[in-house]
Length: 423
Image (cartoon, rainbow, N blue to C red):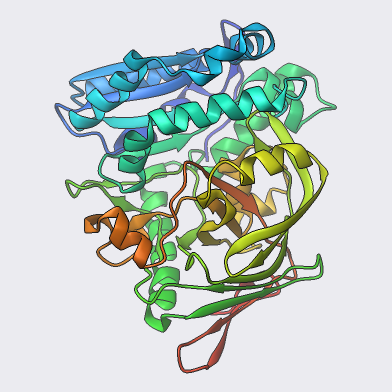
């Protein structure tokens, strides 16, 4: 195991240099699996600049044609939401759209660093945030659809920032909070092992065994129940496919879309969801928190919802478009898994969704339907594949969650017992 030592560079607390190198190499070699001569586009908060530069250095050493960094400044974003004219949130610059589409068409790999303050925009008018989000989603629909179809390699990772670390560890001084968050991230992505890439090869094999079990049984329904009040039945399309761990791009390049990942996932039949599901963790969405909420479905559609905090934010999410009234993803994560066992509420979906079974409001992954990437939007819709401008995961897993798989001939098979896989 590696030893942790504190380093500091321009205000950002970093970890042992060997660990940082392990993590960055894991991202480049396994996460995006960069190919020689390929562009790499990185969406990075400016607070993560030291680690972003490290990734870029390794990418160039691996033969990147070029590395392009799209810097994000969340404090400026907050200032803009508070003070800019309302009209700017109804516009999306053509040059930004062209930026993503041009690199997409060049076969670039896309890496995003998710490290936002979970309550950055809590004092901002949610209508302004929702309007800006919708405008961007409409403008970038082709680009985002391309990534959800795995036509380009993509990966989402995280790096601690002081504001985020303070939210995760509120009673801890900022430097130590950042160190604690670094430790948690390193453990979650297996960067604290002597050979992270070898550790991921073993992990991908474990996830593969779960997908093989689920794909062999071809369940028609999944029935969820727990003590929070979840009582939900989800219908799965006849040709659904369970995925997990490694995926493959349109050019056949293996990559890992999320570092970390503990999930296996598929899609729901758009109009086949019935009952109520209760969230087990807060949802960080657009700089605000939605807490203690539930959704009720009838014929796939959300017909009622409750939330102790952030109900107005949840309402705007659900009302983004027609597809945001339906589910798009079904994901299974055992309660007895590394991130769950860390017992940390990250306030970051990348981590919290990998500590808990979850569902996603909105767009489904076409790759989760047999031959789905080759079907037209009309054919996907006819197969029950939901489409939307949004795809937002929320967590529902608990220690007492039971999930029963029901086959087309009515046979019931336990999938989860007491929060964990039954097989």
